[in-house]
Amino acid sequence: MHAGEPHPGRADLAGVRGTVPEPRQVLRPDGQEDLNERLAVRRWWRAAAWIGCGIALFAFLLRISLSRAMNSDGANNALQGWEILHGNVLLHGWLIGDATYYTLELPLYAITEALFGLHLLTCHVVSALTYLIVVACAAALAVTGSQGLSRAARCLAVIAVLGSPLLTRSGVVFLLEVPDHIGTSAIMLASFLLIDRAPGRRFTPPLLCAILAAGQIGDATVRYVAVVCAYRVLAARNIRIADTAIMLAAAASVPLASLIRAAMTHFGAFAMITPNTRISPAAQWPHHAALTLTNIRILFGAVTGPMAVLGPAGAALGLIGLLAALFGFGRVIWTWRTASRSEQLLCVAIVANAGAFVVSTLPKPMNPYEIAAVLPFGAVLAARACVPARITDVWRARAVLAAAALAALLPLSAAATVPPVVPTAVPVAAWLEAHGLTYGIAGYWDASAVTVQSGNRVQVRAVVLPHDRIVPYGWETKPSWYDSSQHDATFVIGYSSSAGGNITPAIAERNFGRPAAVYQVAGRVILVYQKNLLKELPLIHPVSAA
Image (tube, rainbow, N blue to C red; front, side, top):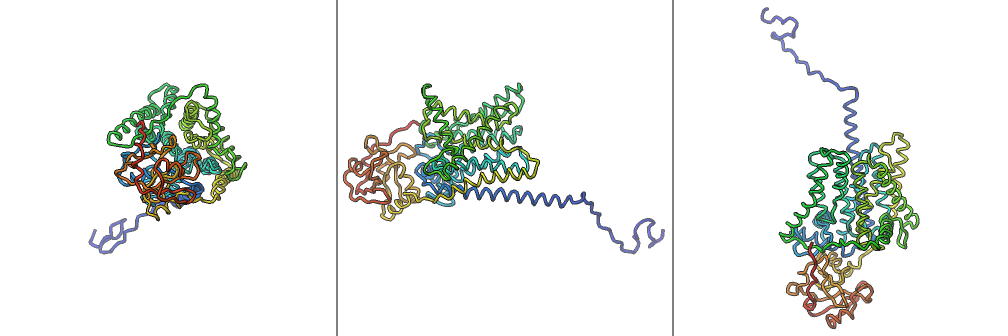
């Protein structure tokens, strides 16, 4: 071969600049890349739709919450969140009630106050956020195992059941005026969701233990998980299954919560009122059972009243939601052996919560706070029972989705038409601040509400009237508030009537003498003194720490 002679069978390499062909592109099956792109875009649109629906639901809940005045129960939580935000993380010096809400609601208050400041609107925002979290957890548990439009339909069914009680005045008070026990159901639902979605994963037992321990620190114990998992272990006759690890994790959360609480107390955390866990006489249980059923009807909104939106139609929506929950409960009981872990847990939690309420001393005609978790648990069971996991017929699926959307939007839209109210604390706080009155005392329902509305610039401390004697209130307070060496209280907020144990001018005069001036502001009587009223108050009543 001579120089410059082309190599046989190859491109010319001698003196001629050859071109290297580009790599040949290997195409996927027809349209595969376009299909992947369309699926990715569709996922983004779905995520945006879920986020948009969450924002819209929050707007509805906030608007409905504004239809009721926030009272001092929520205001006390706001003050505790304010102290956490400003460094008192363990709430040193506080005497808190029998439930602290320390692991959910109080952090929400601290975060919200960091963004928006301290006032009563903050309380409404946190109440709406708390209920939104409950709805989201319930919906996530309800859609497990469903596909296609059934997922959206189940989610809307949950919203329908949880939205119907907001048509009644009592429903707004119990669910949106104050985050009182309803937030605890979110912790329970989160643990059920974890068990339902990832029962065999390594992280599930330790994470479940942490969630349940946090729930027990914040509110009443949440120990139902161990009961169901123990049953599943016995039924399977095999300890080497996922339920064994879950059962042990749930059981371990009980001493863990006690250890954490003991450590917090050692480092100066809040003291608690001892929870009322007494058992009532057995002769009262039938009456308590009837009261429990009444309270469950109130929870689901299956009641009428002078303040009920839509009247009997609204009560009918609540009754439908209650019947759907009962149907879901009965379905799980009937198919117990084949029911999922989460469905069994929901049923056991409902029975345990309602059963403990019946045998306790807590049942009253209008006291559904202690069994608030029954509502979201029932909503999940209703959605899973009434909406199939998969609907193959497109038109039927669309019809079910439309019906669920109507059932969800109707109560929310109707409840949102109730005009917002201006709490009495708003003009009272403004008047006190304008007149330079910055520290005083009042009855429980006015004290912290005025304090929060003023942004803590006017501080009003709660007192109570045993036998017409004004004394500090030993519930959701700090003893240091009543220390005359630290504070100078110069006014009393009272009422013209003594109904309901209100402080009247006559009672104030019997305790503190004649005031220097008396003013009427927004239905309240403000008595101004030229002395420190704290010097004439007895010591705060001691409480049992828990």
